[in-house]
Length: 109
Image 1 (cartoon, rainbow, N blue to C red):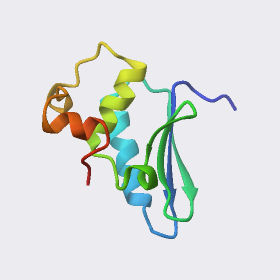
Image 2: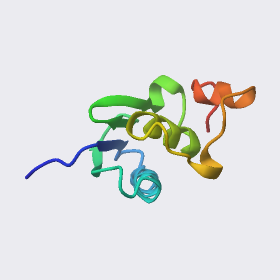
Image 3: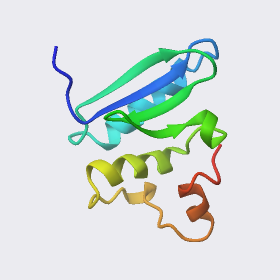
Image 4: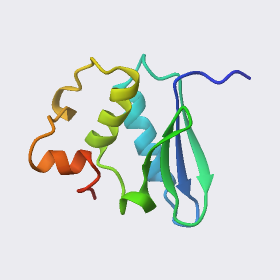
């Protein structure tokens, strides 16, 4: 079986029952990047993990960032790596003031 690239992995904690959040994250990414993503995988984990990786590169870690990613911020992180010239429309906030903190992981839910 061949892995399609680019590949996003959403590793979620089964003990915390974060499957629905992981599934929603995958759905949002696949809906936004309909032709740019090759695969989105849900990876069961434990210990409060909620990590998002793109081709093995860690984009977001709930433990390191202190919370879950805002979807607009996560989409920007993915876009910046797979389609840097792509406009994300309403999800595409320019880094200024409050948004700059969000992009650096300073504000998230």
